[in-house]
Length: 344
Image 1 (tube, rainbow, N blue to C red):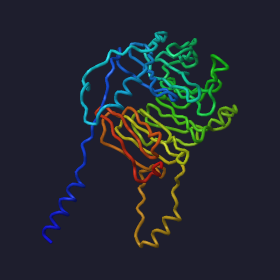
Image 2 (cartoon, one colour):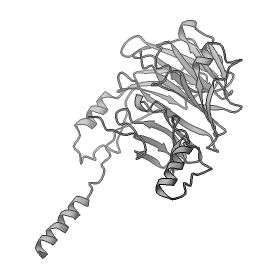
Image 3 (cartoon, rainbow, N blue to C red):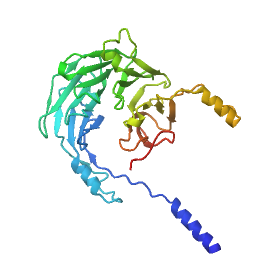
Image 4 (tube, one colour):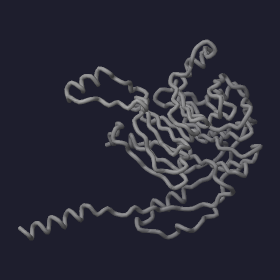
């Protein structure tokens, strides 16, 4: 029995041993600070980057991705080496540096870039290594902070700005916006267009508030007499740095938000406080239901522990999984109170 017990203990210890995570990477020299970087939806090895030098560059990282895919799991060679990889294309027509950039989910090679002056440029790919960059869209009176293509219309996109507004544009109507929303009294830092409910546009501001706009009201020209804001939250007390709807249709009402207050929050707009359910629970369990009065009922999760949160993204294949990037590293989290059925 002692022998069997000892063997069992050894088995338990072996099961508890977790392999150390191995991070494989390839480094590429980039001229200037990387303000923002985005991969093309249709060809993820094609990447666009904004530099603080005022240039937007397009890269082909297929060789580096292939090298990582073929590397041994315990390989650490080349981790410190920096490749002098030349970009496919470099555009210097912006008048200042910028952060706003977005690839079209509909047309391969179509790109938007916006700068800290007020200009937005549309890029159309003409060959594997060249792009035609059109004259700028001018409508904002201050820095363009973020850009988002419509999830349903290949010619429509949204922009937000330090001037406090969100504008909807149609590339077929050229240089003037089709609609303008005066969203906040402070800077509008980020926007996210809902893929599951394309009429919903989320935005986050410099004063810590974030809101949801119903674009059906705006695009029908009713924004003067009708109210387009369907939800408005003032939970965060510092600037919103990132906002993104869940890409999975079964969770189209779920949105993640990060802020300079070092908090990442996840919200479900379909949730409402149910007083009848609380009463039934109280009777059944014979105990008091202590509902927090300082937390909104739509709030699912508060994630803390990171410093200077900058950006977050939902995992495109795994429902409920989020990655958050901060000054002290990145976290990958999968909250247990979010629908997270893994794909087959």
